[in-house]
Amino acid sequence: MTAFEQFLSTLDERGTFFLMAAVFFLLLSMSVTLLLLVRRALSRRDDRLLETLKETFQEPINTLVMLDGELTADQRRAQLNILTDVTGRSTFARQTLANEMVSLRKSLSGAAATALERTFVDLGLDVFCKSRLHFTSWKVKAKMIQDLTEMNCISREELQKLQNHSHHQTLKEAILIAMIRRDHAYALRFLDGYEGPLSQWMMVNLYQQLSQVHFSHVPDFSKWFGSRSEEVVLFCVRMTQHFRQLGSVDAMVPLLHHTSPRVIAATIQALHDLNAFQVADKVARIADLFYANDTISLQVARFIGRLSNAPAHVRLLEKYLVHPSFEVRHEAVSALMAMPDYGRNRLMAEQVHREPTLYQIIQHTSDPLLR
Amino acid sequence: MKILICDDDSALVSMIRFKLSRENLGEIIKAADGREARKLIEQERPDLIVTDVHMPFHTGLEIIAYVRQELRLQTPIIILSAEGLEETVLQAFNLGANDFLSKPFSPAELAIRVRRLLQKL
Image 1 (tube, helix red, strand yellow):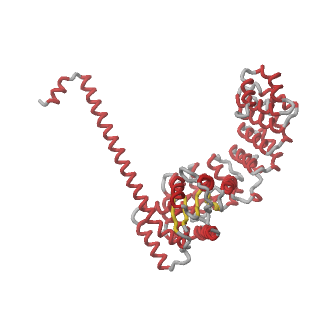
Image 2 (tube, rainbow over the protein chains, first blue to last red):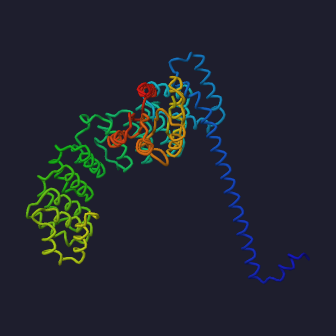
Image 3 (cartoon, each protein chain N blue to C red):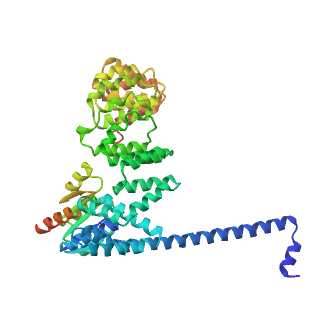
């Protein structure tokens, strides 16, 4: 009998259990550590490989792009061969080259950009990217669509076909963005009849595309205020605000009675930004209806505080001094303090007793360092 | 002439370097981030600096401020920026940048701008 067997025979059932558990966890932790070490080694190997590939690709890409008009057909073929010799070895190498070229394309314009796009096609990377559009992962598909659009290698018809066959919402949005990038005018048309959701990501992309269009070509967003999609209406209200479409103020007023509180809040914010003081009465009129809604009350307080000092509106601000939301109370105090015929003294004399935190808010608002 | 190119995009730096070298505009040195850029400016005293706005450690705007306010050098500086925001452009010029190129840009145009600034030295 070995020493270990002797030791085991001295253990009772509980002792054996704890020993087995300790051995199990020890083995588990060793396996996890080993796995982490292997993963780290593989990741380092990939990083090194990536760096080597990037260095190998750089010189031929520079030559092909920068000397595009100067190279003879043979010289050009020789440079392309250097690249295809490497990319022929693995998908990883092909993907790395495609990524490098797409990343460069984002920074280049003019003849260099055209030469880069031509080289991308000559290397067959457009075919490679298109073959990846059949992958099941929507992330791979979305990236390929972005890359192909960046390299100007995908037509509107191909995108439309992909759009028709895609069921993933984010992928659909990625295709839509690609379509807009291909054809800026499309950005001005696609909202017609659009009823799907619009994510924040999509809105940011749309705004970015619209910012590149000459302001005279930016559409009148008020024509989509009646859209059935809440997101489309929200987007159009925000765009009216960003592009300062002052002529849309009247069309915006009915949105104060929209079914969505988000649209109402965004509308008041837009009217405030557009300095639409002429609609102050209409904004004030909805205040009572939405007194319990903090976001709308805050926007109303901001609007009235900046754009009106009519007695009825001042009374509304006084009402907001005892609003359950601290932000609304703060906004009302700031607005009343800024009014020449109201100010700090009147607030302290007439209002401060109404709400326990009002004194602190007034002090806070009065302090130039905290304003 | 010594030209410093500061950008964290190594492929783009390599391409600019290739273009400027082909145009015989001088010796090209490169920095991959703001920290390296500051070090090279101090050690190498380049005749011209081409810098991206967004870089790790120090932005291009901080590099301009460092050159103009701390080192008190009049080295010509060209700023490259992907955003092209009016505020960034104004800030760059206020800090003392000599030229501004918005990304995407043409390397040929950059070479012309570099040559023009070097000729003024």
